[in-house]
Amino acid sequence: MAINKELINKVRADFGLNIYEAKVWLALLAKGIATAGEIAEISGVPRSRTYDVLESLERDGFTIPKLGKPIKYIAIKPELVIERIKRNVETNSNSRIELLNRVKETDEYKELLKLHNSRIEPVQREDLSGALKGRSFIHEYLREMIENAKIEIIMATTTEALDKKMKFLKPAFQKLKKHGIKIRISASGEIQDIKRISTELGILIRPIKVRTRFYIIDREQILFMLTQEVATENDVGVWINSKYFALALANLYDIAYSN
View (cartoon, helix red, strand yellow):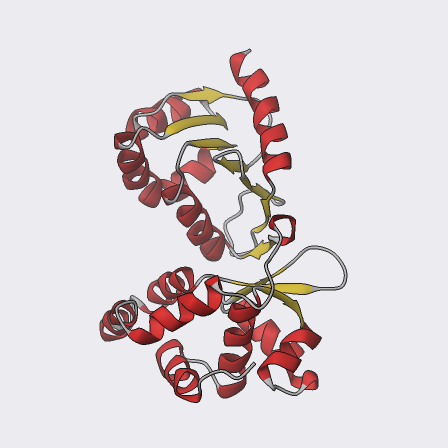
């Protein structure tokens, strides 16, 4: 598949990528999900270099690795990549943020979306799962999931985790409640902290004893945390896009919540 050379050059300039990174990301956007070998074939990047490039793109939040063997990679949606870059450069470069905002209004951005939405092969729902690493990236991914909820949000978490996410949860929940989105939260922690956060968010929070963190969106997607809430960037989570699994877990939550 030939990717427009002008698009490659624009992506390199606007997203701060080198030539191989730009080609690999664009190829993965077009494919949706692929192994390193498949990406090398589509992008024209030497296979020996593709692995290093994919690691670099994963570290910078352009891709996530799919769970299982052989290792496959999933392309992060362009709008989420833009939001991640904006937050990384916000303290140092306001002009860069303005540029990234303008990218979303260009023909280039439309081509990126077209590549992502018109893949060479359809991606099966069960293939869309992967590991997420780093608190900042996980928070950004969770925020997008929450803001795009259409019916319901279920959260089982801790008061510490809620406090760390308050900056984006509060405005997001206010907007979702206006649109009639159902929000249910259970949290472990001190009762006084649960009451404080519940008041601040304007949502009833049920106390639980078990320390866990998972989020179910519309009974279709799950973000399940594998580590305790820590004070570093070493958070690890698993995102699963499975209606079957999400519905089963949500039903178990319903039983526990009603009791």
